Length: 149
Image (cartoon, rainbow, N blue to C red):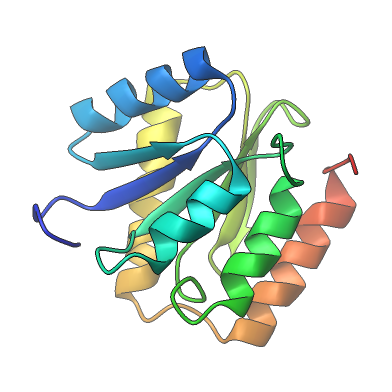
């Protein structure tokens, strides 16, 4: 938790309507949303001194695939410990988080979103996972359902 004392959740979503919905839902859930449109903007926020506690990433962004953004986060010391959840229409349910990497299918219920974020933060509070386990989890998740460039 940075600054305000509320957990900061990065939202990386190019659709303005979805981005706004996620921001409002997270604010009501007691989180501080930090919303951006592109992967590059997300990397800038993560590298900022205020950082983030968790990241919700759309599967396909204007400048890169969400998986490439997740890889960049894992490769960056400022983002290596940030739990990641893809918010994607490629699935219709939750993909259980493993090693701090999971997915939530669109459409979703606000309760599912809040439970997912709470689980991400609990994973961090418990000490996270080794980076190799996180990379392996991302690979499994990508092979399981994510598609695109």
